[in-house]
Length: 340
Image (tube, rainbow, N blue to C red; front, side, top):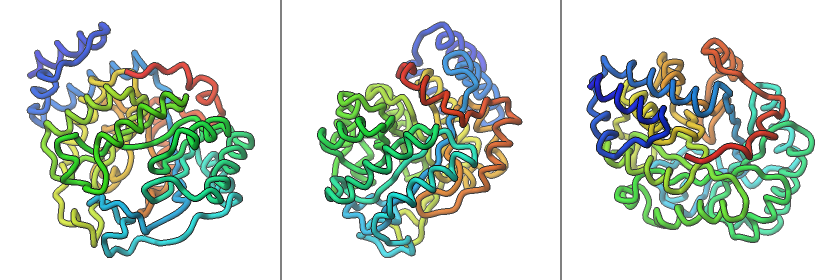
């Protein structure tokens, strides 16, 4: 297996691609050899994307009562959970949260709204105003995750100053119907491609630990490569009481680190962003996960769960040698990034 690690390291560093067969073989790597794979993936990260870090903060601008039945989600109206339910927050609150996130060390700020998409025009106008103000009044890259958007909405968001749209594929095409039945994998995939056509940088990832196989995890990575996802958030399920996945068994830390490294080898030029569930599932190995090829982190709180103090995350990133930027440099340079 060490020979395989050296082989794929050389191929990817040389500009080649990781084959599905080699990726599948790497999933069988024993835990004791995962640090070697992580080191190889970290070399690939440093060569293709350097040591700049993307630190993204989220704002849950509208919570709960989502019509979709995603089995992991506490905000779905199909399940009885303790997730907060509230209408869209005011523009001023969105802007203030963005400014606080920038002070805490964020380089990006993502407006997240529950629901299938197509928010009513009044709420959408408020989102447009928030995007304009955040783009103007901070040095943050402005992102959004608003469900399914029309071409017209995408164009208006782009004109307002939106940089990136998040729309996670979540899992493989094969396994998707086990996770959600109210829409399809292909609808999500098409949405990603449409965002690109409208000049918006695509962000898409998934969740580990929903009962999927290692092949499903690889299939997701290769689908993200096909979709041209330049930012790939890797979430690890934090099972929420009341959802169908509340008893799910999540992967152990070394398995998560292994997959982060393999994702880097598959997607050498993308931002690999460790996202929800990292504190619960990686525990004391969060720093090691960052040295497995990641170059992004969600900081602060998540949509319905608490994260850890952003100052601790920023210090961890600095200790690991990352260049933590919150001065707008990434906003000006971000369009130069080439999807894997």
